Amino acid sequence: MFGVGLHFSLKDLMAVKSIAIPGAIAQIAVATLLGMALSAALGWSLMTGIVFGLCLSTASTVVLLRALEERQLIDSQRGQIAIGWLIVEDLVMVLTLVLLPAIAGMAEKGNVGFASLALDLGSPLAKWWPLSPL
Image (tube, rainbow, N blue to C red; front, side, top):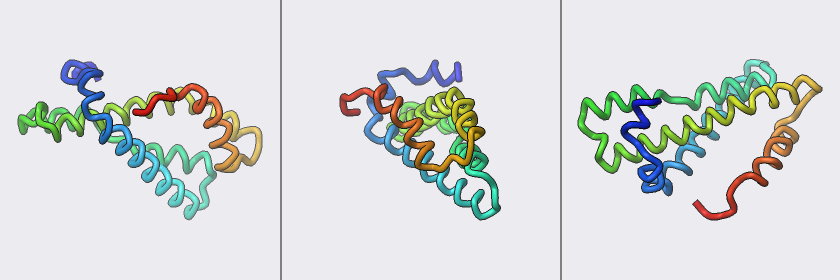
């Protein structure tokens, strides 16, 4: 990640935010939901399905950066969008890793449904999320 930071700044992310942020969030959501559906079909618990889905939604930023370097595309618009997209994914995964113990704790207390899990996590995040548009 240090190497990625050398090639990509917050200014670069803000330049591609209209594509990278919603795209990365949508991709994470779709991959997570598909993982949850597959885990439900296999008879796994909701918590296992969430973790499995989140694992499916990650990509290797370093591998992509290396491929873009080899093709000399880092400074292209598509390269900047791809790097921004993966930076957003990485930030979401860091937040997820921080919240995972809390999610697991809620799941241990009983049979936690997806709606109650979303409400329990969404309420504090909604208060924290900046009100200004992206």
